[in-house]
Amino acid sequence: MLSPAGASPSGKAPDFESGIRRFESSRPNSVPRREAPRLRPARLPAVVLVAVVWVLAAATVVAAIAPGDPIHPRAYLSGRLLVADDSMDDTRFASTVILMVAHDEGGAFGLVVNRPLGRRPFRELLQGLGDKDGPSVGEAEIHYGGPVEPLRGYVLHGPDYRSLATRDVNSFTVMTPTLDVIRLLARGDGPRAYLIAFGYAGWAPGQLEGEIAAGAWFVIDADAALVFGKDHAGKWQRARARRGVDL
Image (cartoon, rainbow, N blue to C red; front, side, top):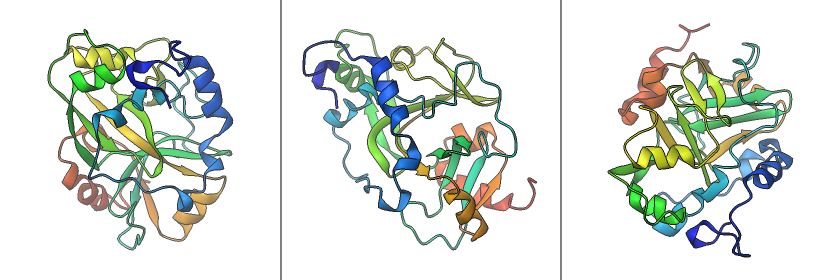
């Protein structure tokens, strides 16, 4: 974890590329989902936001996702929504809607899009990133992205902002693993639609397929309202109403 002010213990600036390589070497399938640590949503102190320093930089998620990659084949669930069935008895996933960021033969990675944890001033977020003098307006809404590595931060956003590091998720959602997008958002610029999440949901090869076959989840096509809409309390019911409609 990076120390406050966004510097490493040695005092050097974070090495984003090595962070990406470290994350890719420990892909989500190496962490059994059922053994993931539980997030404590009651507290999200400013110091925790320092964790966003980043692992946002490591948010390449999977080595298979590269800048400019086309949308993944429909045989996999990348870019679609995974919706918890009524019978889901795991409280970490009950009534959740998960955007599948990556899914292939090596496993699956997704972010919950309907569990906000609370709001923090962008100023605190910038201070945690070491940008104490940067302009900032408003607050950032922080979301629970999943139970695995809850101090890792990720930003999903619309394609109206792109950098060389931007990764496609679907036709209206991308992920950018650099700090520039946070600085833009803090100034009131950047993408119009975005979601900042901590933690993720990960599955080993074949694990998610088995859970779907067992009836724990169903899959629907994603839309911007379900991913970026502010009616988080109603997302699961709306997604549930579409069961069997999206084939």
